[in-house]
Image 1 (cartoon, rainbow, N blue to C red):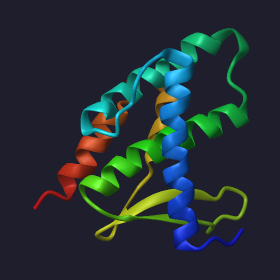
Image 2 (tube, rainbow, N blue to C red):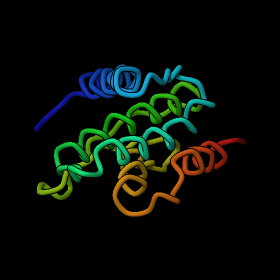
Image 3 (cartoon, rainbow, N blue to C red):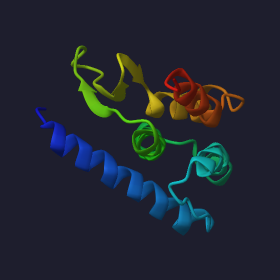
Length: 137
């Protein structure tokens, strides 16, 4: 799949917006695009698990949730620090999107995946704060 940078930027902005809408509709929580709201993402990810624990999340649902919230957190980072989205197809079987800034890449969807699937103690907010801290000069 080939995508221009502009198309990818638009896709990620739309995905971030969809995270806001889904969170409001499912849980009545308002994500407001602020740095403080990144901590809410940690809570919301666990709320998805609580709500759907009986129907273990399917792969497509996991992929969608992680990409929506990864886009949301990444868009906040972009507004605060900068950067651009990159669609990595180095392994055609598992392409993924990262945010690139100052020679580093940040896998915001990946950290959401870790919290959702592997370890509820992993913090999206801590990852975000470290990414911001890495670029505060």
